[in-house]
Length: 164
Image (tube, rainbow, N blue to C red; front, side, top):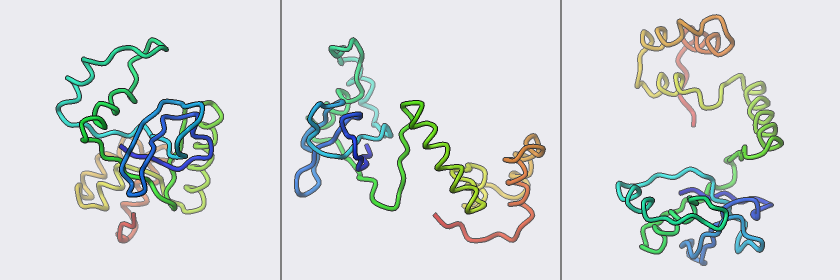
């Protein structure tokens, strides 16, 4: 699970940590948050998740809550939380306004850098998971749009190191 510092934690699931960084509690949209660390909604589970999920009961809102599932892992001492630190951006898109903010942020980055954000084909190519011929096949149906043009430019330029 991942957590990110936010200025409005009452809008999110919140993780509380002790001084050593160990998770003490998880709360869904608390009125009085115990920290400013929002749970981002990016989770990696083991094979036990299905059984844990089968035993969940609906919340007072009548929903099965992901926070309750994560709490099971916490209670069993199996919850690992990584804090996404400064210099990284987590963009919530749960409201119309936050979706617009995220879209504008990504558009600004891409425009200023001339690079796409989270372009799977580019990542695969730069990591040598696919070769130029494979990339060219992937680009073929996209060649007339801006995304395809970006990938074609990648194929036709010297291979720069991949910087994360």
